Image (tube, rainbow, N blue to C red):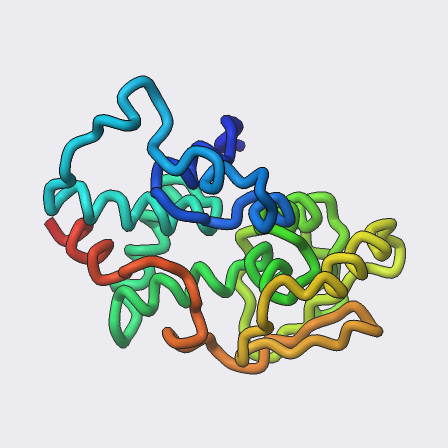
Length: 207
């Protein structure tokens, strides 16, 4: 399986803002944006003004990096969003939000999407009582995500929940004592708090 294996902090520096890719580190002074708030590379401090295409590209790259998906996978989500009724950009973000690894992160069970992806891939969670180990699995309204009884990640999960780094979205419900969450409804655009302009992504793929 292809994955990005380089330094995650380079991605935040390239986009010029925190993408919260490394969990707790992003909330400390060790965050790369706090220390070197300019693009990586030899010419990072001398980059020129972005063209309209460059602005659209950066928005697409930002969304990919936030959700941890590669280009081919992201394009498939866009094609899927185009076929659905409604606004294509909002459909795209909704599909990305409903990924199992993202829901685990949104519930507060993992400090970052990277950690939630690893926890899911290692089989620590069950969906509707059945073991789920595919991070890209799309959830539906009413689906229940719960830490499996045999998992050894209970202490780590409790630490993440107690840290309370993010506000629980309205479309999710959590029962921390039982280490489970429920998808109450489909996420609306106002519930998806990420610094991305989805319309620019639509314009980029529509060329």
